[in-house]
Length: 441
Image 1 (cartoon, rainbow, N blue to C red):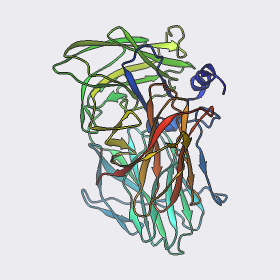
Image 2: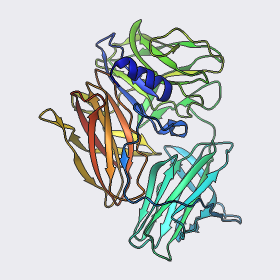
Image 3: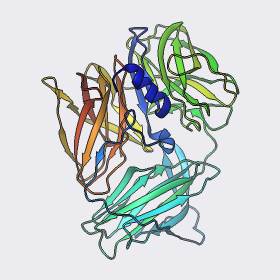
Image 4: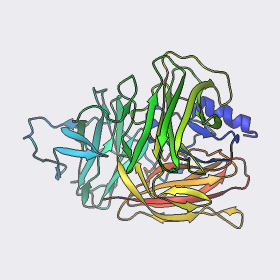
């Protein structure tokens, strides 16, 4: 990849990226969270690369688990894989009800469970006991999202969504009498709150990681442009979340604020997401009190002509900036959301010393860590090498914003050793920081 145009072309074809066109010095950071888009992720070269080394991965056999049957007393827990499974759980403020348990065959190396499309969002929780020296790893869309080790545990529930889903549980060196299962939950409360798109699903939540929604809007069905105005009563650093979905290939979102160019984001997926708050851009300086107007429009590519698409979904949400710290000259969130739970910043590691990338070793004996990074200068991505067989699927989003950007790559699952480093896709210089979070609660 030799030019920025090459990067843009690759991103337009394969990835959800963010670009800062350099039109205004107020743009300080862009952030792309990929969890909500993983069900549409494609394996590509260059722009999106899952750079994870595996040791001794065997051939897996696809096995459908046995569903538990029978009524469950209202409000009562039940037992799955010798773990007490609650009848209800709460994920980021939304309630879910237990609907079934799936017992997995522990004689197989890999058990695959396919959930059909449902009427509403779901969640799954990994339950295991008696693993001995082994481990059971839950993978969702080829990404590791939970792991039980040793005596076993009931892992935190992970959102799955309403689309048909393929889940895998990889069993590594488990004891002969090990028990492993999946608890499946369905959304129990009312529909989405906050600002909801005309499709009734995509929405900007009232609150994200403790930060309230200032304003939000979606374009009318068939419209390829929207304008939103809002009032501020004090100087505020505002984060603007953008979302788009379009069956037309290579469609991007252009975002302006107060008639000044902001940034572009793309390419839009063909199915979109439920929670639209995950990808955002922010400004270096607070916006002054008064009325502000933002404009979003769909274009062909990062700098192309306007696109008319009657099936498109386009939305913008404005949130106040949360608690942050400064690393590599960029703001880093202290608390973030990922895989259906809150995470708090625990450690930051310099990615460059004396002008050269450095590798850090991280162990996760007792609990998982969420890993991400920020960077500016160059086209920067993350490499992750895991020691345990069967560990895979961290998403590596290349950051190409000259004024800086950030990404949450995924979980470093418990019971493993990892080597982490950043790299420039073209071998150039950059600055950056590796970010490590611990789960809250």
